[in-house]
Length: 207
Image (tube, rainbow, N blue to C red; front, side, top):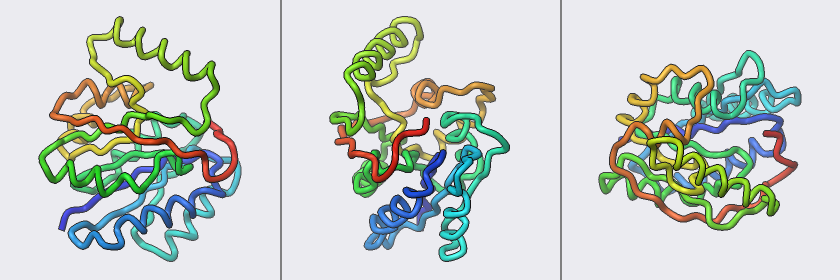
């Protein structure tokens, strides 16, 4: 049986950790060929996010957590999650349900067909202002022009990565990692899928 690790960076998401947990568990209800673990990486949240995660862990030993020693940001949290992930394949996603878990079975189907990376391209945003939309487009255009990396436009960090990709990423010892850039840098065959971004389940973005 193959194992899937789900990595969820969190910062002040006490109202969402239970919601994302329930939604992820639901995706594996009929997936008898997979076992899974959910790894919350808490970025030293000042609210009681980590207490909510610990409660889940007491009820379900598939729930694990990494508690950062101080606030580092979501990119280092993602890299920390990769360090502790034990799965044959890893899925990284936001903990606020804007990255809809119902795409997980589709991502796994493409992985089973041979793709080492399944990158999710945002099509409809649930929260962004016009300023963010245009500044994001400017960023990707500038990044592509300056860097010798073909990073997909509007790749949000919602992705599936094979163990071979994870091992390649862990070789990099960046002090200030840019996760999406590193994922694009290490190579391996990939497919890019469109997804519709949902609104946050609760609260406002803290990152």
